[in-house]
Length: 120
Image (cartoon, rainbow, N blue to C red; front, side):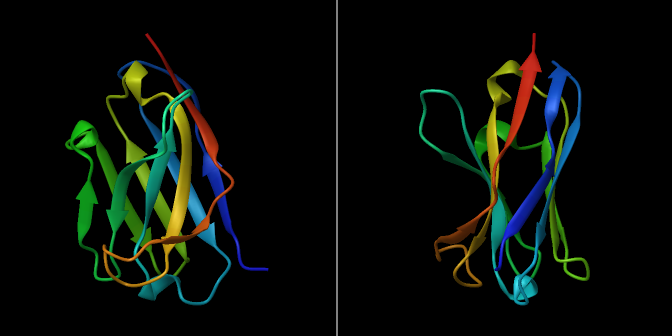
């Protein structure tokens, strides 16, 4: 069964750093756009960052300059390095693999989610 398995996350003080990882057990990871979404309590799931098959990236404005998305195609693994964390970054973070190679395709597979909590 193809799946995305997440690791990382936890509790950190404001200004701290965390790294999330997401390993894909499938065979086409390098060909797809992959990324991270998050969902805070009582809010809709929102896009955080994407990385395309060729390494091009997109970020939501609120994380630009603080978060870095990266991928290691040899390991079928996606990463999210989060620096200067703020209480408003508190959410459950989900990795996703899109159905296609471009940013305009849609999420087709989700990780199990991991909690990130930033204390003030």
